[in-house]
Amino acid sequence: MTARERVVFGEGRMLIGGRWVEGGAPIVVRDKYTGEEIGAVPEARPEDVEAAVAAAREGAKAMAALPAWRRAEILRRVAEALREQKEAFARLIAAEAGKALKWARVEVERAIWTFTLAAEEARRVGGEVIPMDAVPAGEGAFGFYVRRPVGVVAAISPFNFPLNLVAHKVAPALAAGNAVVLKPASSTPLTAVALGRVLEAAGVPAGGFNLIFGPGGTVGEALAAHPGVDLVSFTGSRAVGERLTRVVGIKRLILELGNTTPVVIAPDVTDLEGVARRLAVGAFYYSGQVCISVQRIYSHRAVLEPFVERLVAAAEGMVVGDPLDERVEIGPLIDEREALRVEGWIQEAVTGGAEVATGGRREGPVVWPTVLIRARPEMRVVREEVFGPVVSVLETEDFEGALEAANATEYGLQVAVFTRDIGRALEAVRRLQFGGIIINDTPSFRADHMPYGGVKGSGLGREGVRYAIEEMTHIHMVVIRPPL
Image (cartoon, rainbow, N blue to C red; front, side, top):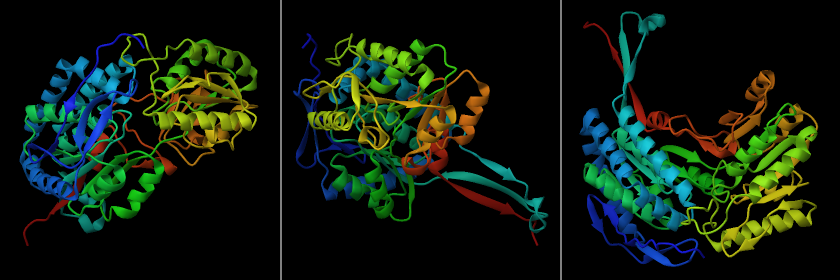
């Protein structure tokens, strides 16, 4: 272990109705690399969930009453505070999430932009004039619609981006004039506590932002199903997302449920080294624990061997170790149980005939970047979401077959195609069944203002501040006729 400054957060509390309060049994939070305790938060009891939703119902009235410029100013102050505290947030993320410090800093920078975008969009939540005389029934009438906040948003966030994925739920909700009850992942709640303090200091009204903790199967489900909640925004596994569709009742639902992210490399690609370096980062930068981490690479046989050589070299050049070490690019998985699962999937693939071109090594919660060749479509490392630092390179005979193989999945979040041929690029756009189609960059690409979300089993609705605001508001149609 390298020498490092230990991160200690201490005890966090729930934020309900503008007050930091105690709860049930403590949830201990550990440094994901060393295993040391760095903080704790209280598990929410049923009465705490009730109190948080009740506070949010009142907070929603206060948020809806705020003029747009006030909401914008609050969000701007949040962005400024994150900028001032950037290094502290990055170090906290590196410790509690195990994310390499260099990537944790990128996450904080993205969150700053997410809140900045939300501040701008808060001033633009408007409506549209509808030409009523487009049909005979509307002749003589004047029509327009306005957008109004849905009310209370339940935000259930995952461990892998404990700041920016929280920001993508909280910032647009507040920009639209909603109140929020946030339940972050139990393994990474401390960043949410720190953000709660920032939101409080920025002037969010009491009850406008509420924070509770606990397991998804109990606290999360109780929150999502609560009749006082108007919209649920969830990022996590497909199994949990499917269950939420059955238990939430008649309310809006935004689901982001993952992917088995494919990449297609056309035979016309010339800069194989550049593509390999980009894809190595896309596959391994947070130990593969990203919904759009590169998982399946379909390479034309004409470039397969030189591409694999370069991908292996890029993977072996990445530094593995303590995420708080400035040199490190790849830290631990979220816990050793997940590392053991990933190791098991690798061994299962090898038993089935795949070969490890590099990696395949595990020490505690750390799995080294792993490149598999000769994997087959029916293998779990290809068919299911690995959520670990494992990428499989599969040979294809033609571009059309590669597109078909990329589509052969129950998921549809993002996909990437590398080609110098505009015809192939347009064919990919026409044929690929994904919410995001990235040409000549990693499928892990995401700009925080773009619409982001999937089709098929990858979810419902869209994130990206403007598009999330549309999900988090109701349309109220107004029709005016002359007096009788």
